[in-house]
Length: 301
Ligand SMILES: Cc1cc2nc3c(=O)[nH]c(=O)nc-3n(C[C@H](O)[C@H](O)[C@H](O)COP(=O)(O)OP(=O)(O)OC[C@H]3O[C@@H](n4cnc5c(N)ncnc54)[C@H](O)[C@@H]3O)c2cc1C
View 1 (cartoon, rainbow, N blue to C red):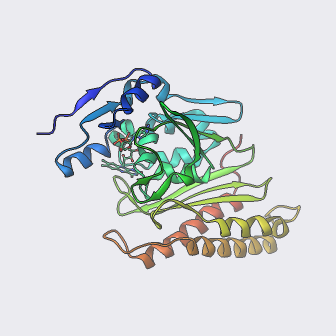
View 2: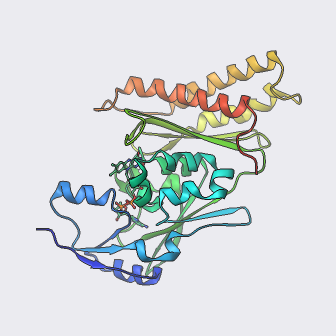
C-alpha cells in the first residue's frame, strides 16, 4: 500500500527546504496528482502539501500588475473582482475547469505544472503574456508561461523548483478578452480544442493562444501579426459601424482565424480527429474575434 511521508509547510521557505529533498514532490489540490498516483498504484515517497501556505494562495492587484499565487484555486481566481472585470478570459477559462468540486481544489500552479496542452487556465495565461515565478533554495527565476513546457507533461522546471506565483500586466481600459472551449460535454470535459483571445483596440493587437491542438499550449503568432498589420487600415477612424467596414473586418477575421488554424498541429485521439480539431480552431477563433472586435467591449478597465 502507498503510504507517503507528508510535509505540511506554512511558509514558502519551508516548502523550498522540503522540496530540496529529492524524494519530495509538491502537491496542491491533488486533482491531477491523486489521479496519477491511483493509476500508477504509487507515487513520490514524500509529498509536500502546499495548501497551508497562505502566501501561495494570494490573488492581488498592485497598480496594473495582477499577481496570482500558485496555490490559488480556480474558484478563487474566477471569483476575484479584478480578474472578472479586467481579464475575463482567465475568469472564463478557470470557470470551465472540471466541475465546482474540481475548481474548489484545483490550483493555477497545478494546472501549469501538469503541463497538459489542454489545461484551461494555462491557455488564458499564455494569451495574457503571463510570467511564471519559480523558486528553489538555489534562487529565483522568471519564465514566460509559453516557455514553461517542453511537451505534453514535460515542464521546464527542476524537480526542486516551486512555482510560487504568476504575474501579468492588466490590459488597458477598452481592452477585452474571451475564452472559447469545446469539450465532449459542457461540464467535466477536457477541451477537444480551446482558444484564449485578448483584444486591445488602442494597440491594434490581438493575442491568440490555442489549447489541445499541439504538444503544448501555443500562441498563433502569424495570425497575431496579420491582425496587427491590418486592423487600423481596415477600421479607419470611424470604427466598425459602417457596413462596408464591417465586411472588411469580417474578411480580416476570417483570414486571421485561418492562420490560427494553421498554427495548430493536432493529433487524432479518442476525443476527436486532427481534422476536426483544425476546423474547431478556425471556428472558435473566428467566433471569439467577432465577439471582441465587432461588439461593444465586454470588459473595461
Ligand atoms: C474530474 C476532473 C476534471 C478536470 N477537468 C479539467 C478541465 O476541464 N480543465 C483543466 O485544465 N484541468 C482539468 N482537470 C485537471 C486539474 O483539475 C487541473 O489541472 C488543476 O489545476 C490541477 O491543480 P492541482 O492543484 O489539483 O494540482 P495537483 O494535482 O496537486 O498537482 C499536479 C502537478 O503539479 C505539481 N504542482 C502543483 N503545484 C505546484 C507548484 N506550485 N509548483 C510546482 N509544481 C506544482 C504537482 O507536483 C503535480 O506534479 C480535471 C481534473 C479532474 C480530476
